[in-house]
Image 1 (spheres, rainbow, N blue to C red):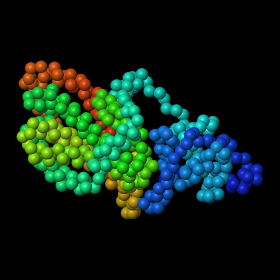
Image 2: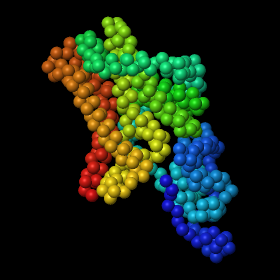
Image 3: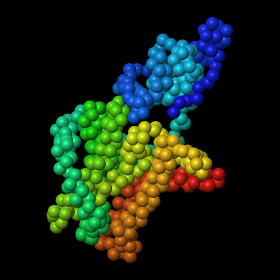
Image 4: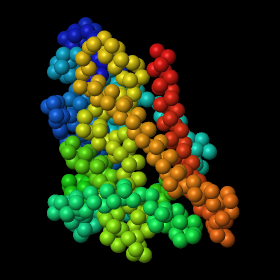
Length: 441
C-alpha cells in the first residue's frame, strides 16, 4: 500500500536556492551494520524486497518505493538528496513516506542514532507485568541451535521431508484420521485417566502435549533447513507456566513465498501426520498397552494443529493466508474494512468489490466461522472429557489421595489456563467492540 506523499515545490527550485529545503532534510541517515537483501515478485509481478540485519533476527519487507529510499540510505546522501532522487524517479516528493520509513528502520535498529526524529520508545513494563512475564514467559536457549538442527535434518529430517515418505504417509494418515473421528470419544482410551488415576492421566496428557509441540516445532525447523535457511534460535520457553519448545525460523523471510508458506504449514502438517499415524497404530493394535498413550498424542496433535491454523491469532494459519494472498497485516485490514461498513456500502450500492476487498470479506466470515467452531470444540471437550473429572471431584469418588494430587496439578496448570483465558477474553472483547461499532453505524 503506497504511503501518502506530500506535494512540495519542484526540485529545480530547491536546487537553485529559490526555496529552502524542509526542516530535517540536511540530516544524513546511516545504516547500522551489515545487511542481507532479497528481491521477490508478487503474483501480479510487483517487486518487493526483504532486508535482514546480519547477524540479527529482524527482517523488514519493503515495496519498490521504500526500497529505493533504503538504497540511498548509505551514509553519503542527506535526506534532501534522497527526496530529490525519489522525486526524479517517481515524480512526487516522499517526505511523509521517508519519515515513516526512517521511523520503521529506527525501531528495528537498522539505523544509527543521527538525530532524525523517530517514534518515542515504549514505556517499560511495570513491576507486576515484569513478575508475570518472568513467570509466564521464561526462555532457556539452546546453544548453537542452527548447528543442532542442521545435524538432525541431515540425519533424520531429510527422510521425513522426502517425497517417498510423504506418499507413503498419505493413505496411512487418511485411514488413521478417519478412524480417530469415528471412534473419538472412546471409553477404552480416556484422555484424563490412566486406569482409575486422574493424577497419572494428567501427567501423561502433559507429556503427550510436549511430544506434540516438539514434533510441531521440528516440522518448522526441518522444512526451513530444507530450503537452505538458518535457524536463528531455539530452546525451551515457559509459556504461561507451560514448557514448550520454540524454534525461530524467521530467516525463511529471505526465501520466496512458496518456501514461507511451506514452513508455516509444516508445523500443523506434522501434527496431522503423526496424529493420523498414531491413530492408525491404535487401529492395528487396539489392545496394546501403549494404545491409550498413542491415542492421547494423536488427540493433542490434532488439537494443536487446529489451534495453530486459527486465522484470528498470529499463528501458522494466519501467516499462510498473509503469504497466500500477499496482503501484509491481513487481519487488521480485514477487520477495518468490515468494521467501517465499506463492504455493505459496495454491495448495497451494487458496486463490484476489488480482489483485496473480497479477501477481506471472506477472511472476516471465515474468522467468524472458525470462532464458532472453536466454541463448539470447547463444548465437546467439556462434555466428552472434562465434565466427568469435575463430577468425580465434586462427589468425592476420586481414589484416596488423588484429590490432593489433582489440586497440585491444577495449581501448576493455572498460569497456562489463565493465560489462554486472558488471550481468549481479549479476542472476544475486540470482536464484540467491533460488532457494536459496526451496528451503531
